[in-house]
Length: 522
Image (cartoon, rainbow, N blue to C red):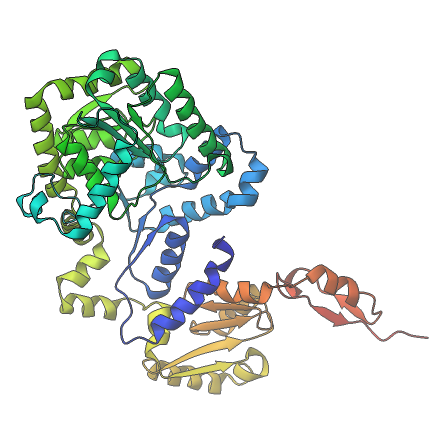
């Protein structure tokens, strides 16, 4: 669990960045924990904050409850309330949120209180076209393949042919996790109940990596067990391949190409599909697709025209869509070519990078100035108050002083000091260290008309604040809270008759304050 360690990581990241010659121009965080870190660092250095959620806590909470997990177990295992609370702050703070699909904006971010206020841009993820290349690419002619690729293809074919009686047939390919939401059972039913489909094509389902089904988690074990039962129920022996393992980095691209070479079809039968990365991978290799009419597949097929969308809860519709592609050579070639061209033009990392940079220039005003030239950057930096991260990175000296009988007590000398600090602002930062709470410190600063310090060390060193917005050092809070037991301290010290516990202003989360009692008479 990373959440308990993020504040310390942020604290050390700021320290590391301050040692570099130049601080970052923006921070982009992925997932909730990375987003939280990026949000805090962006605030520290006063630069834009970009966020990509991928998956969000409210959706995960709903799915876990659907799977029968109790709220208490979910909280203990996933710290889901901490994640959701952080995501609300992230959505509110982000200058820009990158999403894979429009549905993600509506059905994921729409669940959050701050969701409607977010600034969103849809930029689908990309793939490497040098890895997911077309099955017919002449530079990869089988006679010219290197030894490693030949070995991969031989391994895959050997594994598949173990299951198929007629390996020369085209095959239907599915590649997904063994999860109920992936609806593998729906695909097996569609294939198993259609005699014509079973006669013309084989089926291969790569459902994760396994060694012993009995040792897997409940959800995965149930899905894989159902697959074996369906194989028997629909008598798919000699027709259904369910390999136990595959290598994502090397074997999966070749698997797509083997499917295309056979004249096959890739099927994504998931009940819910936020994006569908396997769909663009398969398409880039030249495999026509049949996919769920939900979320990401809708946008992929609308852009690429590379397959058919179906209601995956209707097994007859799934079977009919697969057969329509397998029976029509012209349709197969059109979907194949469209998928290859669409994946390369719209879903490559090159396309992603170009869209991302254009989006930053057009959607993030502060970054737009940075990208328009040094003059604009300098103008902005001179007119705006620098963040505490940038400010403390630039100064050479730091002066810390107490308040009572140090700063205050001689108004003339105090004003002279403030004048000198103002003159030396480019090279010197200053701060206040006091036993007072933040509220009491601000009261004193207001009463004596202090200029805003760069640093405030309050409550006898237990709280540190930075910059004009008094941003608390959460890393320091986390560090000193370790094994801090205020109730035990209070209980122990209250046994001393000469001490009084200070309520309210005197004590804080990591500070227990006591005063001396008046001298006892007698």
